Length: 589
Image 1: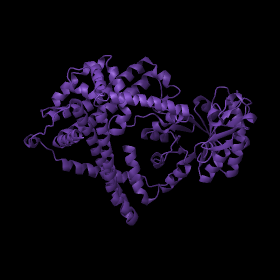
Image 2: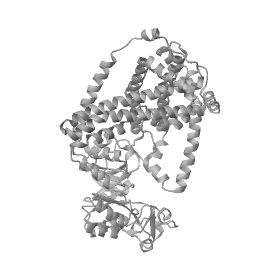
Image 3: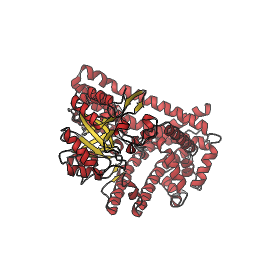
Image 4: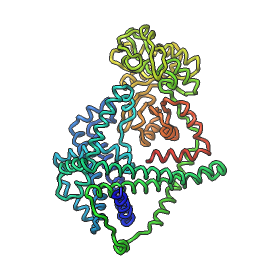
């Protein structure tokens, strides 16, 4: 414990002493990231689309896209760009810490040259060690350093939700995650060893990290955990202190809330940037100190005074002023009554089984604008309301929907969250929905055994109930939805995408439903320009609902329509700036 305290004191002292160097490094990293790495990555991807002839990438065509020789070559180039960026970003921090702890002088040019001498390893098979290392530590890096290039890299929610929906999936997920975490932790010192030692290879660095983990990794992890805990406490304290003025003004002087909210958001944005950069610097100091067991060294005050300063307070004031004005303008624009539709995902599943009449009724009572349900065609050509291809998850028995008749399926009891209900037909749903005066969003699940009259039968059913002009129909089968739109131009037809990269143009449907991970500002603007509606699925967190309702997308598909409706109602009210500030911070960081 004594050594840990000594290492921490030395780390903080070094960072304060060399704070100008750290500011320069972090500014250089961000400038490089936003002016070089991101534009190059965007350019390479657009070139891939142009050369291969693809307009955009979805789950239907991603396999063929990735198998194209030119795409393979360009993907390797992108991987190399990301690896090099992370290598230089962390390499500078590790080498700086190493020299600071030894009291040796260093120059940025010298560090740059030292890192450049290791570049030949990136063109050898040893780079695979580094790829594995980075891949294993990406989740940790994304959590700890959200301002780095790794921000936003995560497994899409729809994939994890499917994996975690079964006991077997949860066990498998936990087992694989445990193995990957163990390997990642034991190899976490690979990069500091590789960047600091001038003649060591990537493979040797990897092996040295594993050898170190036999004796000192536990102490290192405990120390890093303590640092992270203190960092989180600081974030909480800074956030509470920062929002207190807004908290009181919002209640007692609403006229000043907008201005205060802009200042508050600017202050917290800058504070969070400083704290995360500080965390990154401390981690590099501690990892180097624990790996090389350096002696405690304090630079002389004379050496510190010889450093040249730039007017940091003035720069911070200018940045704060600019951020405040941007935030005030942005928050003022967010005050409006959004017309985002709240879509209950498979009905209201809280206290009900998904895709059942009880869930439909609960969703209607909650006030949902649309109620989404899944249908499949049975062996006798009818339509049953059911999501899965088999009965295993909800009924606990064998049975394939495509091989069963509607009458057989309607006798089966299904279970979810301690509740039970019966499987229903599409006719049952439409009759109840018409009685409740609610609109349905029908998702057509394609299992491959549909009859040739699939679309005509569906259209005829909707026409018989006189809902062709009011209901929505969507499916992940783009070709099928294009045919449906041609058959019934007045029906609102959409395509469901679990994945989309690139522009969505030349679509002949009315809307798309896209998983939230792939939605950004440019896509929203692009679809607005084409007068295409955008439904985003499946949003179950308050902050994600707040984000997309604030952006006034066409619809949000959620398991919590009551919460989404409450968020939408608050969107045009002046006294909710505090919630907007907190939500925007969570989006950014």
